Image (cartoon, rainbow, N blue to C red; front, side, top):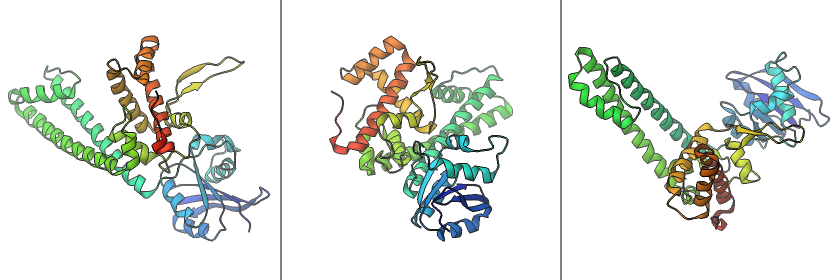
Length: 340
């Protein structure tokens, strides 16, 4: 049985496998493969091209299949959907596997970099920290909402909520004092945990030469640098042909709605990793805030763009420029030079 391309529709326990031979005809049709049998099935096949959708567990299976000499490509599900013959009406696991097998062979298909275990470990730290930050924000809003029932209205600032809640705590009646006190205690614990994870991320960035190099850019701190290194597959940006392709992968480039020779650009696509895009945008906001007092080319360009197109367009444009410079720095290494 000569198999050259395989499409696998991933799931928790039951997988669908679709393999084709050199002529393009199906040679391996397994609509239901149990989780414990999948690795054995792939191990007994000669080295071939395997396509999968980038979803939960995809990177793990990609690393396992690569150990047997297979070439593994991951794709975003939205790029696979057009190749499903039955469309929305004929969607099932077998049809998805066939669509994946067809899509992975397309020359212009865009692929997701396969992450290593070390990169996943770093992303674990980032995901856990962001979860604690979201939990802290929810806790602050809960305190504000409860106190507003007693006529105590506070601003959105986190420091204001902490200060005002502590000031009114002793005057709160009965169980109100107990509940707000417990919430403030939980808030202190979350602050300590987030500080610990900030220390972990700073240490990861300090121990990585590429992350230290990225932190030389204005608007790129330890969190952003570490997130970029952990998110890009091989860490050197080789999965992207140019900086703009990396910026588009993050979702910082405008979407197009062009027709009849008229180019019309809309809002940014917001595709890709929202966490990485958020870090780049926050760094650009900080960079734009300090740009008025600087005379370098990038700062002058950012200030002029803000005056011409507005604050948020300047922020997004600056974030996209930082993403392109990060890619160039990873690609060229020590040969990278800042814009004159």
